[in-house]
Image (cartoon, rainbow, N blue to C red; front, side, top):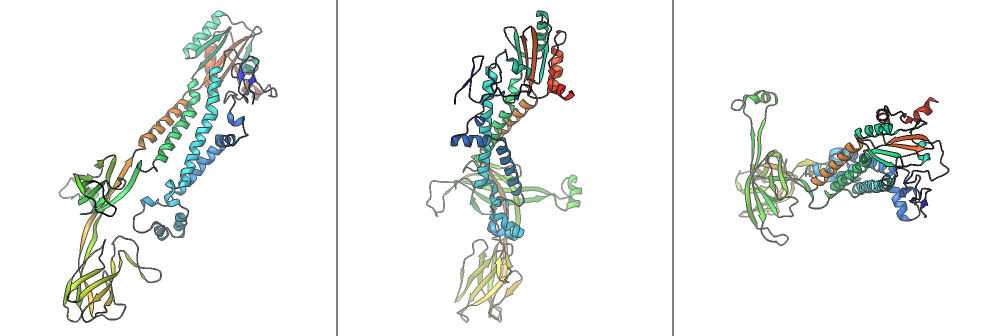
Length: 541
């Protein structure tokens, strides 16, 4: 498409409404009495000019404010739905996520899981919405800021008559502008921090042009913020997981790719004693019963030595011992391990004996590791026990059959098969805490409880965030844009001599009342009236 040449000689891009140089209206059909739309200085925006190629259509779609607002609303609605129930990362690791949501929240929880809201913020469609919003912000900004910048930098001092008289603030004076009066106006403009340009006796005074870029600085900050948010889903950039460790247990630290391991040597739980400790806590102890003094995990940090074959137990090298307390994390290579939760007295091992019900004679010990139970226990002399089924968190399901609510041994139960010389085919017994059932009839032998071993369990949050500075930078730039656009106004004043008359016009992007008061001060004692608000005059008529 051809460029448009103005009467002043300036060549404007196709689609320009107001000449970038003199401000003359290039579209003759424009209503001569209608005030000019100065939002983008009448510049040629790509989205308003081209609509032929696929690139044009994509550009026009994302440059639309309606599309941007729709994406924001969609993201807000989706984000609010994601807070109805906890995200999967925050639910206890008791059972598969689908079963947990259905068991905890019923059919609504099942629907929540089936629709993928349990991992909302890392789902592909949510990330796609964020990417769409970022694209919309980028294209909408470029579509407006580039032509606006070009128009503001190319504007001449002497503006066309049609441009001046169609400004909101405009007036014509038949009085002559003396050098003394002009000097006073310049002095007032300088005091008000206007930059003054002169051409053939005409004046353009301008200040705070930088405030026009405030919205686009906002957009830049938001784009950087969204990029930081999306980078959290790039492996290695962000880790926020819970590590549960039982006393004596060693596990790989999540997010370290198996390079670092942590051993829980001891978990310490201390409370205030109202008789021995500070009396400050006495009232609190009397009111709530217990006031925690200290949560502490005495841990040992290890690092893997060399490479290992998959399935092979890694060789570990001790790095250091450290006590992890609330607000006193263990830090290593950008990772921080924070004390967040605990569980006291969790069952770790149960002991049983095989006993002859008639004689009371007992045969051997059966030590069952509740986290890794063996299936067979040979007691010697023809006596042995087989674990047919194990239910860590026992309950009867809707069909009345034994089931487990979770993998945590909160209420362990077993189905044992007991072999003896008298019963070589074995006898079956169901054993739970304070409950024994013999489903195949009376047995000659039974499993009797012989003690339990408990361990304290600590919960540590493993965190690593390499995106925090990006998100912080985006937030800072956004706030700079807010201040830039909110506390300053772009103001301009044109003074032109036309056929022996003095034409004055003024414009601001906002705060017209403030501009009116400022113009009254500027034109004081000059003999020339300040530009008047044409919009106010139209309302009076």
